[in-house]
Image 1 (tube, rainbow, N blue to C red):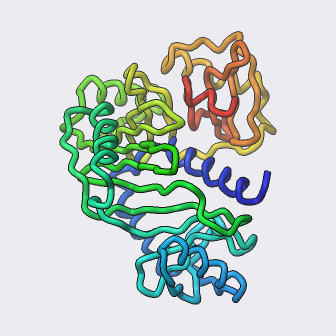
Image 2 (tube, rainbow, N blue to C red):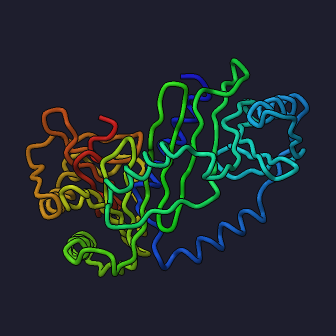
Image 3 (cartoon, helix red, strand yellow):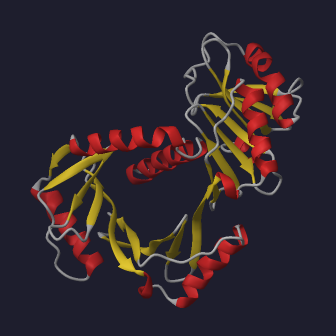
Length: 332
C-alpha cells in the first residue's frame, strides 16, 4: 500500500468510527464548539519549504484554471494533514508535509453552476430517503478535487456538497458518471415517530440503565452503509436501522474501552456480552466463535464465518459499545 492510500485508509477508518459514534450530543455542542475555536486559535503554524510551495502552487492553479497565490504558512488541523489557504481566501489545499503529498484542493461554487439534471438527481435521493421534508439548496456549494501526486495533475472527479436547511448531500462527477454519496438529514424531537423514540429510550435503559435525553436525531445514508437513524446525548449514542426500526449500535460515550485483550479472555468476553446481545438484538451468542480484533479493539462474535455481534469492553468487563447487523460485519 502506498503512502497516500495508507493515509486515505486511516482517514476513512477515523471517519467511520466517528460516524458510528452518532450525532453530537445536544448538551455537548457548545463545549465542543468552544474547544474547536480554541484549537483553531492555538493552531500550529507549519512553514512550507520552497519545493512544496511550488508543487502546491501548481496544483491549485490547475484547479482554478489561473494563477493563484498561496499563503506562505499552513495551518495544522489534525491527523498530520495541514491546510494552506490562498491569499484571496477562495481556495485551500490539504497536504501531508511529512511525505510531500497533496490530498485535495478545495473551493466554493454556486448552485446555479450545478446542472438541473444533477440537482434533480440529488433531490430524488433525498426524497427517497425521507419524502416528508421540503428540500431547497443553499446558494453556496463547497467543492473539492483529489490530486494525483505521481502524475502531478488533478484526479478525475469533482465532489460537491449540496446543503440546505437541515440537510446535506455529496455529489461526485467524473468523465463517466455522476453519483450521489453521503446524505445527512437533521430532525427535531417533535418530528420523530413516538415508536422510534420509545425504541431508543428502551435501548439506552437496557444497555446502560440510562434515561437518554433525545432533543434531535440525524438520518444518514452513505455509499458504504444502509440508511440509519442516529441519536445521542452526553452519555449514550444509538444507531437504529431505518428499514427495520431495530437498534444496531449503542455506545456509552463516557466509557473507556480496553485497547488490548490482555486480562479479558474470550470466554470472559462472551459472558460479558451474551446477555445484552440477547436483550438488544435477540441474538444468542452461546455457540459463537469469539475473536479479538486488534485493528479496532473489539471482540467479534462469529457464526458461519460472519460476525453477527461485535463489542468493546472496559477493564471491568462492562460493555462500552455493542453492534450487530452490517455494522458488526464491517471488516470481515
